Length: 281
Image 1 (tube, rainbow, N blue to C red):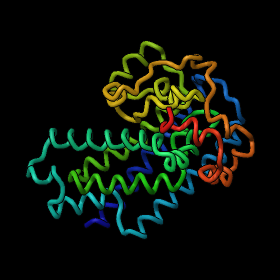
Image 2: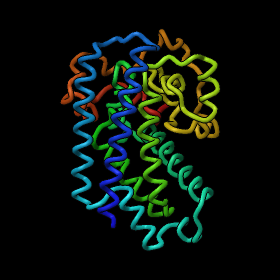
Image 3: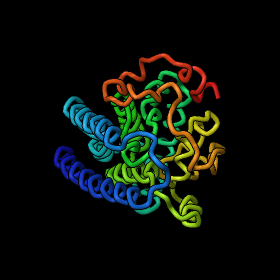
């Protein structure tokens, strides 16, 4: 049963990914927010190599542990594991609680990626991109991907998150990560309304600033509420969206654009390891 559920999940996620990636790429091409500082063709070629590699890592992880997040949810459901499964209830309320738990955990995980220096070393690869666009939303170090998956497995088992919630959350997380990293110019009024319920590109772009006080804010991917509740919300960058500098000062050289150099970033010493991580802000 678990194996049968995993194949449709992969098809669903891949289908949404392809359609949404193309849609956001088209929108940011048609309505760009910021002028690029680096060649798009070079960045995209290298970012896509990382994305492809991460896909292979995830497939390899599946074969190694024999399951995915949905498989873990199916196991928890069949064995009655987790807090939500103890309620013996189903419906919109249980779905909502499960989704909110997953989303808060992703927010908290992101905060820890900035606060704990070994994790920040891994996460630096994502922030080292000198421009921000839809490809940045999928550019993460494979070790960070593995850690994130392990956290998801644990949360699903502890709370008994339903398979339906897991599938929908994974699709939504992937979609919003591409959306809020897109170099897409939304009308200010629309952005102001959307960011009441959704992390927008303008809101998340602040998080990719070279300034430490901006880098350590706006951690949300899906819902903006955790940043507001936990006081990690910053509305706008101090230099303005057009003039703000994206990336990390220690990794602006062209040599860090290659996939091999990106993968080596966690093992490179630099001022931003000690001074610009969330742990020292």
